Image (tube, rainbow, N blue to C red; front, side, top):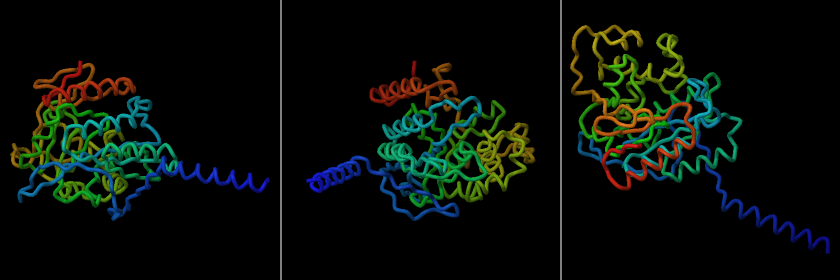
Length: 343
């Protein structure tokens, strides 16, 4: 009798394990080779754009995003900002009405490698339609800094072709105008959507949004990893705040490549430690200069000339603010294709 009961209990336990595995599939941890791109097969959904290259062939447009899963940054009081939620809502908006693809780098602490919540988070992102790349934290770099720099290296992924366009963005930047990337149809080498804003402010080039082909990203950056980037540019970055390493470096790289320029009196030349060109250089054939319409909208600034193109959040905002903006943008997107305004 005891043996029969034990057998019954074991059978029930086996069935419960089977049910759990069916209803709770575990995502495969994908860790890219730090020395090069991985050949691992990927099965996530992606939606390619119809932008044509010079040869008339269609090329995909990828929005490159990165989030630190294990810990928020403490810079600018952002330690409590819901970045993980922002990433989900951000990418849902991209896939709702646009034809871009999205690649999301999820940076995690090695202690979280088998964390069930991390695996569920990855599945959620994949179900939205993202390519998700899990990257463990580096020994001598903070998770937040690695997250900021990792998105610059999307060109290394084997599913991104050399002619594809890669656009950097922030996870707390919610697209509102679903024709925002119309300028990508024009024949430039670099697109700096907030060009006029940063030229007027005297700062560095904002990461939201900068676009180049994957091949140009590779050539302009010139290194293979966030670690290499920091070590090779110590003199450039030593006077910059870590929060602005990415913007400082990409500003330096773009000016050095001579694809984009700023006026010779602009402070950026001094920031990136380059000698200014003392004449007006014409980069109209290589660099898209985005106007003020690409300035962000926020709850403090709800309108832009021509309508808002994207929505940004302040560090003190929380999940309720993200959901409010997301549902309002979604509602307007279903009613019209024109730029949205969130009241």
